[in-house]
Length: 240
Image 1: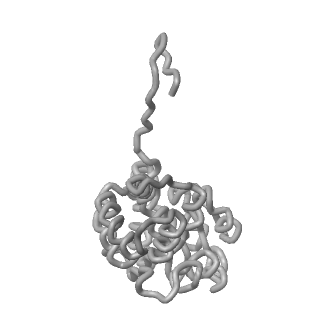
Image 2 (image 1 turned 135 degrees about the vertical axis):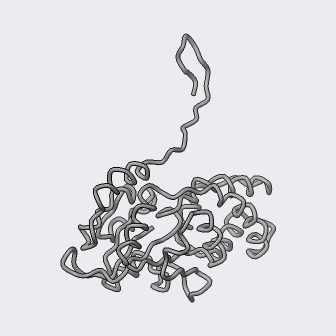
Image 3 (image 1 turned 45 degrees about the vertical axis):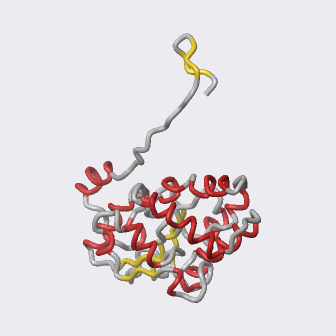
C-alpha cells in the first residue's frame, strides 16, 4: 500500500508523477469484503486461518488462488476457486468506500496537473469494476495497470511495490496495515491515513485553506458505525 513518486529529494526536486496502490491505500475493499473468504471456506467445511492470509498480502490473484487451494486442501483447481469466489467479491465492491484523505489528495493532484497512476495486483477488469463505484475516479488516472498486464506481481518492479520503488530511486509513502512492518521499514514515510499526507513536504502544491477546512474535515475520518452486542444490567452494557 504505497504512494510512489519519481523524485529523489524532498521539496527540492520536481515531482514527475505519483503512483497509487488501490486496495487498502485509497479504497477500503478490505472492510467491504472481509467475510467473503471466511464464508466461502466454511461452505467447504474449512476454517479461515488468519496467519496464512497475512502471507498472501501483495500476491497476484493466481498466486493467491494457488496458495488458498493448497493451504486449505480445497477440492478445486485454482481456476475453479477463482470462478466461484470472484462473483461473491464483485457483489461486495459496490460497498467499498474511499479511505480517509484519498478523494482530497487525488482531486488536488489532478487539479494541479500532477500525473497520477494506479498500479494494483488486481487484474484490470476488477480494478475497473472497483473504481466504477467511485465518482470521477477513472478520469483522474493517467495510467491504470493491473497484474494481468505485467509479467510479475509485487514485489517485482512491474507493478511498483515498496521494494521495487526504492530500488528505482523513488520516494515511497505507505499507509500500512499492522501486518506490513517490512514495508514501513523500507518506506520514506508511514502514515496512519492519507488524511495525514502533506503535499508540500514532497515538493507538491499545498492544499488550499478552504480545501483543508471543508473537504479535509469531510474526508478525514471513516463513518462506519461500531456495533456492540451484549446484556444490559442496571443500565450498564455487560458481557459484550
